[in-house]
Every structure is written in structure tokens, then in C-alpha cells.
Length: 110
Image (cartoon, rainbow, N blue to C red; front, side, top):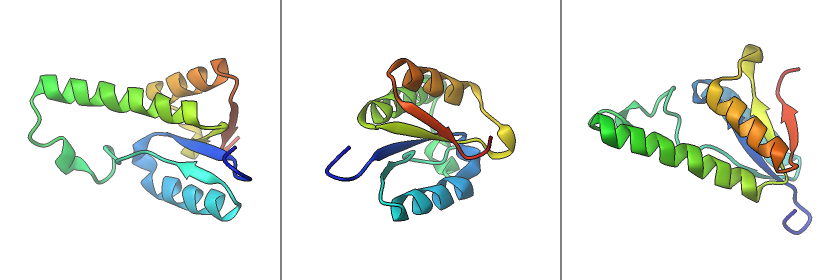
């Protein structure tokens, strides 16, 4: 909690950009501080990857994965954007990380 506000980190595949944006708005209006992804690599931020060589691409993806775990460290809970029940490997890793840290895990879909 920061003041009276719960801190929630959104997790899920970046292919679900619209669901991320909708959930961020909803949770914010409910009185939460929402931490989201920095870019949507699977749905619209393709220019980020265009000119990267393989080594830079690998390091950047590793940095983003680590950075998202630090966002989970800052949160009271995570909210998983699992449209159609989809949870990929990175998101599974984030759920496991949050669970081990004692964070509450909630889901968009059951």
C-alpha cells in the first residue's frame, strides 16, 4: 500500500493491449495504483525490435523480464490479463514469482 492505495502490477501477454488498457483504467478508477508493461512488443511496438541484432534483442528481452519482476516487487498484488484463459511462459514465471513472494494473484478470467 502507498497511502490508502493498493499497488497492482498487471501481467500477461502483450498481445492483449486492449485488455491491458481497459483493466488499467478500471483498476485505477477503483482507487488503485496500477503498474503496467512499458511496451507492447506483441501488439503495436514493433519498431522497438526492428533494427536490433540478435544479441541486443536477447539482452533487451531479458532486461524487460527482470524489470517486470521488479515491478512485481513493488506491488501488493498482481492482476493477470489472461484473455481466453491464455497464460504464456513469461506470465507463468511472473505468477510463480509473485506467489513465492506472498503476493495476491488475481485474474481477468477464471
